[in-house]
Length: 573
Image (cartoon, rainbow, N blue to C red; front, top):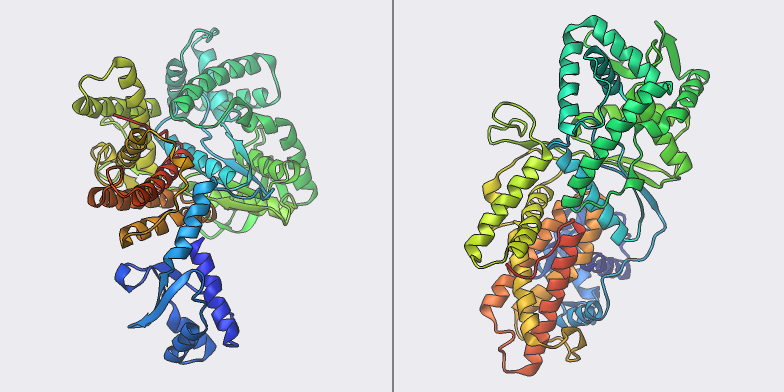
């Protein structure tokens, strides 16, 4: 936590100067190492708020700063920066603490519900589910690591209109046995049903009728529903296992889970006059919601046919998580197109008193994966790419790269490595992008030994693993103190100390790409260090052991960082 500690040092200096602190102190890494390791870059803002000339302020800070602990030197540079040089002895002490202990975060007892993946039933998972699944899962791992009590939720779409549509089409075609059908066959039937509903009004009416009967617990419709759900979940489970996703059966809490709660919700919203009945439909009108003509619009919760819509289910879901689960934080990993919808559900729930004051609800939006033409990632025929096909393509590409490196590799090892490298590359390629933005997907850039890729980081890990293996002793038992012979060792060690800070920043922002960026940077710094300095072959035992300890710490960070992203490390290619 270097930045936080530096902030405290600066704050203490200001307090000694009788300067009241009513402003943030922004500390950033210095781009030019010769100018210092860190810098204060909002000095003008601080001086204006304190009503002190910035040059006088600089002198006051420098005069009262504590040079005994973490700061060795502090100076001023134009136009208006305070540059901070860390004390190498302080860095050594902090590095030794990490070497002796695992990276540790105290339990904070805060309960966080993370809603992610959430595919619809009766369909294969497609590329659109990749971001929700892997971003949500990595954040679940990261928040668990930092001490949160994480409740994972896979809110599957298993209770909506698609079932009425599917049942109507099965009846239309006199199909009564679906036991031996695959999910692909079910999906084809659903696609035909959807097409039929667009051109046949009578079929659409039957769809709504059968959806209502399903939601009223009719045995015949329930049996079809159960079989389709089981088929879908079985297929999804295979994909989760391949992707190393930590969602389990007990994490499934789909729309059907709230079928008994939703009736009470509708009744309660009507009693509170938040919802009204109009033309037989149960609707909530929000003042700010207008159509193109400027007329008031409403959110339908229940149709006059008796069918509950997603809105009613999602309100029930939000209430359950707040009241029953007593979540301190609820995170939704749903794409950016759902931003307005989530906001509406939140407003209705808050108005009804379903959300407690202690609960924070955040929609961590994410952009789309695009093809090179900047359109949604699809096949040439315009069909959505299935997630399993994307995964298999990535594995096959990894296999080719491995065979180029090692033609004598065994089939078993090739199969294992190609899965780890291919899936790791696919996940890292997505996670390394800012989740808020769309991005163009390119296989070519994904599996490479160069640039910000998982394979580059894996290769750095392999390199360190090889050094530690050849040492033939347990590095964790080395008693020699870490020492800095040059600035490269100091800078690498400072980067090691930033790991904890990056993890906490990721939790704060819900942005796993910050970890990716950090892992790539520390890998780059280590690779340059490795090429420039002897490690295992260094004759001086103290320097050798010091460098082995630093290498060991970098390997620990790379492994932990990749594991938090849901990526398995490899020890050889």
